Amino acid sequence: MSDALKILSDLKQKKYQPVYFLCGEESYFIDLVSNYIENNVLDESEKGFNQVILYGKETNMAAVLENAKRFPMMADYQVVIVKEAQHLSKQLDQLTSYLEQPQQTTILCFAYKYKTPDGRSKAGKLLKKHSVYLESKPLYENKVPAFITDILKSKGYRIDPKATQMLVEYLGTDLSKINNELGKLEIVHPKDQPITPEVIEDNIGISKDYNNFELRKAIGNRDIVKVHRIINYFGENPKDHPIVLTIGQLYSFYTQLLKVHALSDKNPANVARAAGVNPYFANEIITAARNFPMKYCSRAIKLIRKADMQSKGVGSHQLSQNDILKELIVNIMSR
Image 1 (spheres, rainbow, N blue to C red):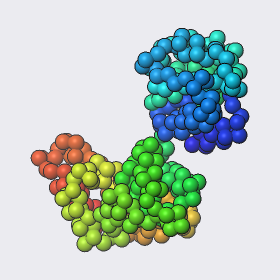
Image 2 (cartoon, one colour):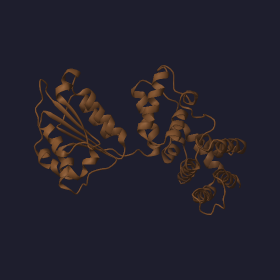
Image 3 (cartoon, one colour):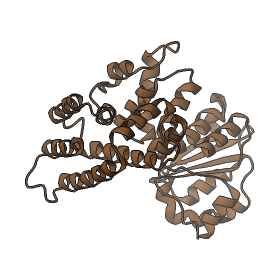
Image 4 (cartoon, helix red, strand yellow):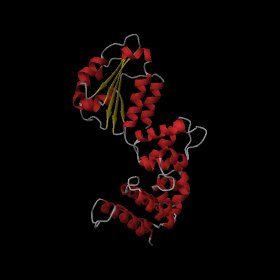
């Protein structure tokens, strides 16, 4: 994320480079940079003669280079953007001579999504040496809350930590999807008011009371009534609460507790750092660790792994997904 923001910062200061090669599994940062180049380097009067958008499926590297070698007309730069550039992967070697002597008045940008070039090839080595090279990697789940907070902060919004966790649970680590949902919130929510769980529930359709975040909290507090209320809700709404996500969240929860048990000093700051959570949630983790000693956490992880196998049809004895989850919860909560 920091690499993409550095590139964006340079672009905003008009520190342009001849070649940008944006690649990797996470498309969000690739789109962030390539869209900025497309929308901001040239003004509208310059784009007609000096901006070319090509698509990897519909073009070839010879056509890309032919466009890149032209001179701008009545402008300082011309912009050539190659979208879906991953479809030109077998033609990257044709870039080598251009990379060594690029046209200085051209800004050539490749949006090479969902993969990276072979770093052992000549083209792969030259791209890293002679271009602004961005490898866009997916964020780990524990980094996504900070991403959401930072994006909103940059636009003048504040968000409640619980609301952030609701978004992460519901949207996962798909940053483009998260950005789209945040865009919806920005349209309807005033900047002078924080984004709360109620706002998320009203505008995105995520229940603030019945979600995996609340389930983890209820389990940590050993609130058996609330746990079963949430599980029953999941059973009535299986499409919105697939068991695979719930099992993943529970596995992450008990893994966090094991990390906390390994600490010699369990103060909130250390706990938040070890568990990889916002300090706001540290006391909840501490409470859960007290309620689930280390041996119970290890036992819970074994039960979760078994339920995961059952959910995939291994030894389930025709149990429904909801029955598997209910059985898992009963076993976890028993002492």
